[in-house]
Length: 254
DNA sequence: ATGCCTATTGTGAATAGA
Image 1 (tube, rainbow, N blue to C red):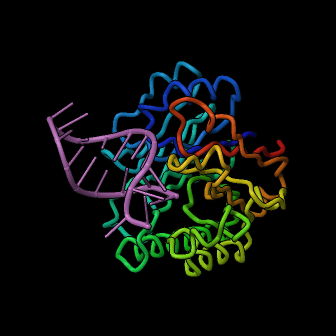
Image 2 (cartoon, protein in one colour):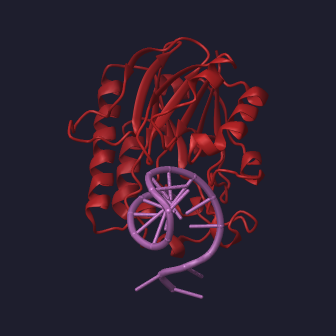
């Protein structure tokens, strides 16, 4: 089973690139973030053999999960705050795996309500993880976590010292989810520093490989045992009209 | 360097991203 995640930074602009990538790589599941619309191009993906579920929002955020097989038991919002209207969460069960697509809040600037919202959102996600582990539900959480887990996940820690993505509180909440028993699938297999999933559009960041690793897969124990590979596909970042993020692909045995 | 680039809204220039 092949599961991919990709923050596309507008599905409207990125549609041709995403279609081409899907045809080439044919994952069983593709999780998209920052679709930035309520008008998802479902027909185009159906023609490629994918079913679409999405939670849209005008201008901002929005997540979509494309699956070859039919999904079940969709949940479209993260528990813990019924007043939260951001389109950042979509859970669906595919072939016995609870596939959770997230676009975790950026949280900048620190010291504002935006940062408080990020931390509260992470606490809610942690509660979700706890519940699923207690129920022994096999799950994968994939998406744009907006978390730089460690200094080896960015080109220069000094740049990110005052940024929400690398704050001690942010990293502590990330680690607390690992301590519960989940695994950062990419890092479990690849110890190398300098492996990124995002490069800013500005200042020639891509050309100079100044990036950060913020798009992740967290796996539950049953899924961790099935990990065959987890790789960052850098190729789409080099294309014309690229997203500033590139896909990450998780391959499970069976 | 409160910049640099891209996308959305909407047709200006502000907001957000990370």
